[in-house]
Image (cartoon, rainbow over all chains, first blue to last red; front, top):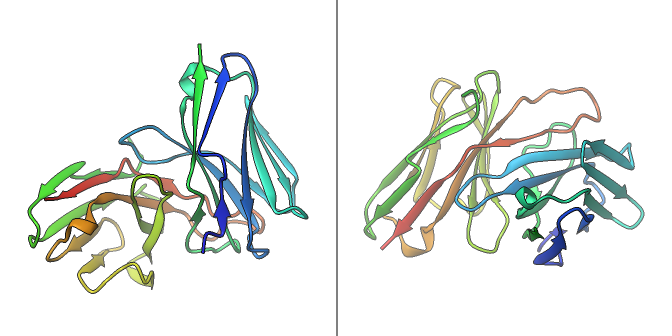
Length: 113
Length: 118
């Protein structure tokens, strides 16, 4: 049972435009959400996170939005750069002391120069 | 480099052989995790340690898998009698548990150890 879902396996965006990656979850106990970026043959790299007490968190070109009622979050990258091309994973956990993360299946972002 | 390090990065082994992976977490982190990732999937939780205690094991962790963290620092993951279905990337991660309320638990991953069973 996939508790975290990324329904778009791939996304292509022109350099300089906005990239929007989406994620849905089913477990209402999730209260902490993270985005990871992964290059081939490397481990996931932490990008940005958001707690359920917020609806937006911004870090440079990256912004994560959380809609708790819809159980939906999104990652906005603006402006997109070719170096952003990677697989992006959404992850969620329940509780501050959560012992593990539940990951989506990833979205491959390609930024076209 | 003060990140999570894993060794070896790549391992090719024959079916039936045993393999062992090592992980050195970020030094001040008290939690250490093992995940597994196969193509087209996100990382899947296997087990985690808080200091030297192994506190949870996923049902994905069969009897052929064993993990240790003897001194609460580095960890090893051993797979006995490997099968072709064990071929995957094995990811180690660490975190500092006990953050303030609402801070969540950010887990930092190593670069992974690729296992190919032939």
